[in-house]
Length: 412
Image (tube, rainbow, N blue to C red; front, side, top):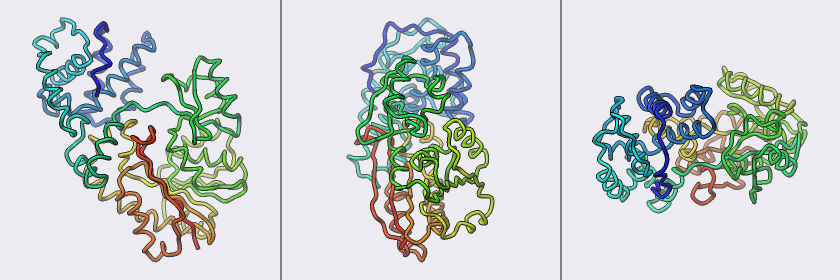
């Protein structure tokens, strides 16, 4: 965290600060997801302008990101009562160089001590980047000290807003002009054929271009996955962990709406969201199937030209977007998810037909969830029928985008 972006002349407004404290309570003490909490908070007061909403969202996210560092400096331990939360807030404000108003919550805030503790703790990675010990140890073990240090620093930077142009309805240049007419400036990204990056953060969901289905918000790394699968119009393609369908919609546009795209997930609620998005995107070659037994999978054995397995994972490549994940993750979750990854590869790969291809992808940076899973799969009975054609490891500190992994395999 840099204290460079100091804002000494910024005034704190009581109702905004109270919203932040309430939000932190929900994330830290009630285990709620930060993005959901922020959505609720932003609806709290109709009179808030975009700067007010920006203050609430960014402050909550920053404090969630640096919870361990700030709590250590404030000398408070979880679960945090409201006084503790105000102390943590005072640390954030002091480090930002904001003059604290004379509210009762800030009496006795030791400003000089806070800065001294910050300098001291910033020499230790697990405090500086604010990560639990066990994740820090795991990262060092898997990526090595140097890479892990750089990756964690990058995972604490705010992520850019990246759009994926929906080529079924428009192209990159027209989308750029349309957004410009709505006061949103964007730029092209090299090596990401469908991506536009916002020059400044903005609420793109209220634009006419969004309502018309001209784009989806999707990180640049995530946009590489559908491309990797090498789909052609007219194929039979299965996306087996479709979720709300960001990659499914991308596949549909690469298939030019031709052929058959089967979106599967164990959660029906996610597929319902995909249905709404597909309608807005003008996509009509998607068929949705809930995986409520082994039947839907067995029916497709040996039928798919292409299969995408966007596997469940630790999410350590996308901490910039979900900073609360590092506090919610548990060591046993990682062990269990690796078993799930093997099962998913084993069971779902049977849908690929001879000469067909599949992509195994995760939003993790750990080799044990990535390359090692693919290597392990290739030694199994089912896996022996596949050849690894190529794979790609994306680290956030090198790419500037989310950490990701993808492997392309072909069935003999």
